[in-house]
Image (cartoon, rainbow, N blue to C red; front, side):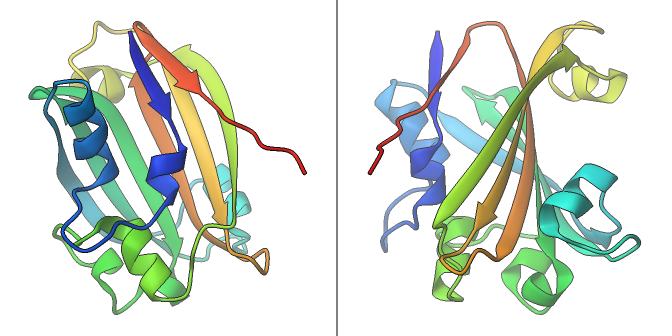
Length: 176
């Protein structure tokens, strides 16, 4: 059973601290790495454009990654940023971002104040199944996250696709 908590992925990292995925895997005695598949500027799918508050046809920067656990692909993560935020930054460049995107964004004045997450379940597409080394039609969890700053401005929308078997999502909510 792999238990995933969102909070570490929303918090900037300190100098010399590893990324949240590497840290989470290490705490479980495993090795977490990631492979950057693509960085490009394109028109996002309608659900992502809506989450980002973009007008139809407006471009955004997308960073597509495959998350690996002990060398095995376990999650596909596409993180989208409005072009006016990402252009000219490491978000729009192919390559690893020191401290991760959440740290870079915080240094740009875009810290996560609120994160909205939607969870859906469906069968993997052929491309997803191939990238995750799953049989065609395997059930997957789709976690869509929208990040807002303290002023309520959206600056990131991510779509994560992961195999459902052996996964548990954990949420900690503090009221008041």
